[in-house]
Image (cartoon, rainbow, N blue to C red; front, top):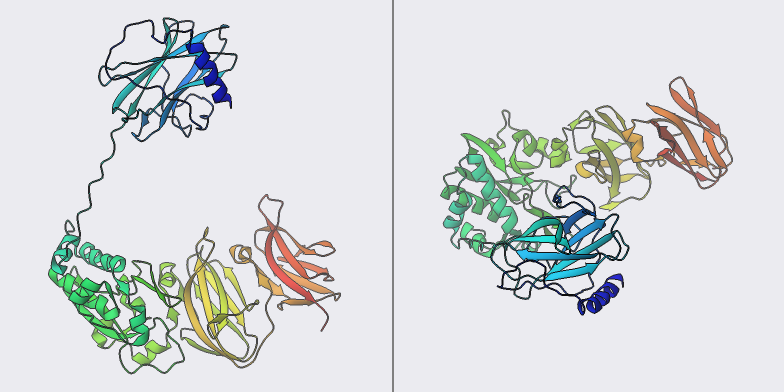
Length: 546
């Protein structure tokens, strides 16, 4: 509304005020002063490091002047697509009834300009604006000056950039050999050339999920895959080899057994190879890669493209956890592994190695337990682990796992609700990440069930808390209980119950509290550093006495 009123006032004013400035002008293409549009008011004027006001004649009451775009951002250079350029100013100690004029001129060539008058009516801020002409902006520099009568107060310049012309993309070669050569153009090293081929496959070839599930793989030759851009593992491997051959990289297609989609640790091992990948010689040494797994995976019965370098040049002692070649020589290990040993390895994901994790116990995928289990790992000191259990591929609700950390060492405790077969899934994340990535899984045969464990929060592992007791998830309502834990670096510990807070006492390196549980849950908090708010550590349910 304020702009509309201002413009109405100016229309009346222009009827009695001359438009021409009081100094000579050129007479070429006119610049058009913008008409009012419902654009937001620019942000409050403030001196900007991007635009430096130019001091001029004495008696200057303009305290600041700056160019801004429609969003209010200060600038001295604008794209040719900008709709309107604002010159914003602030004034101080302005004489009454002062008429302030703006003078715009395009300095790239002679051009006619128009003066624009605006009377200051008591405010500290104001602006002039210039809209994009119907025929578009002239590329080059513009100068704006503010006048009171014939006296120039301030001036500044801005420029309009030439439109960015995007060169059309070079069409991709339609012949396989030509494409391979184009992909490695300018890449001198074997590794860069092999990576270019591997990456192109991941970004351009889709996995044939329907064909895989039906056992109808179609033509997996390199030429057929290049044309169709959809295939199964052997097609990826064949096409990689064909392109590698064309660019002078020695490579082989390797077939064998894998722990991929649908893998079941307790299933009978397959008698025939079920997967294919590649070996490629880089700088005189054979390296392993899997372009199929590097392209993505199967999610809810469909291919989900997720190009990744996780399966490019994988170390042989890591690759063997998921890939067992039919010919032992392609293990590339100093001591080849028997297939029975391969089948007994846990199912390990790439992030397990990326995070420097190492198994300190349970190096075989099959585990038998009488109801509770402890698995020990070590890894990076700032790595955080979590775990869950599932049965028949369904994640179980409840608190069946507890992870504690001591520096680089991690201990995963797990219990199982009843006798049966379960999958124990382990996840890892880095500090600052909110979700973990799967790193390893086991198949566990439990001979009996065990009570749930207390629920723990992420701060439990982050602060290396150790829960001494109680170790069951549910506390009996109305029955006295003692909760004990170790919390290094913790200033205070308290429990929140329905009736209020219970403060823990520090005794012999432990925090201890005796109380009577009330309500539905009891949550234990720890206060760290100089903060006053507690971080959730452990949560118990409260139930009727057993």
